[in-house]
Image 1: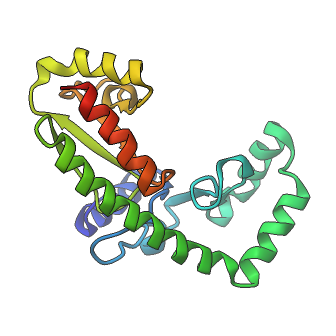
Image 2: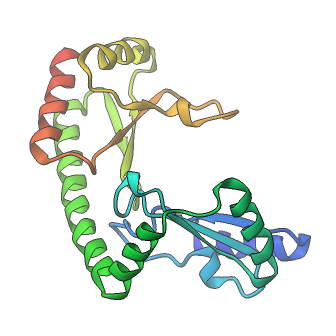
Length: 210
């Protein structure tokens, strides 16, 4: 959201005495434009519960996350956590804490942001060259996924069938919707793949659609 919408949302939360749950999962991987402050970072009324996870920053199987909440919510959060499963493995927490305090965490983020940015640019170039006749690529300023809108909506069932057959399987945008009815589109990820893998997969999809 824009800065204006963020401040308006905070004003709404204060006026109605409610809390905002913020999952700022793309903050570390913003590739264009100036960095945007989190809601929690500009909240001066303790209205925001800020949550994060290490799954995208480090690796999914680490299974460690965190919550930043106002003091009045700490006891309630601790009770909820103890009801769920007591705590995460102590050795994982201690190792991550040392990783952060010794400065490796920030250097890791900088290195991965550069790698993901290069893969993002390569994906965009290759996708537009190979599949630009069928899709319009929507590229957000942050995150590890892009949305490909179909130029001819009636081709959606055919393209969906082909992706399943050849093993190049982007998610359908509708998978992430509960009530919203959007035009057909696919969500592609680029961060986990090398340049060679990206080009090979897009070539495979483009040739299968001819």
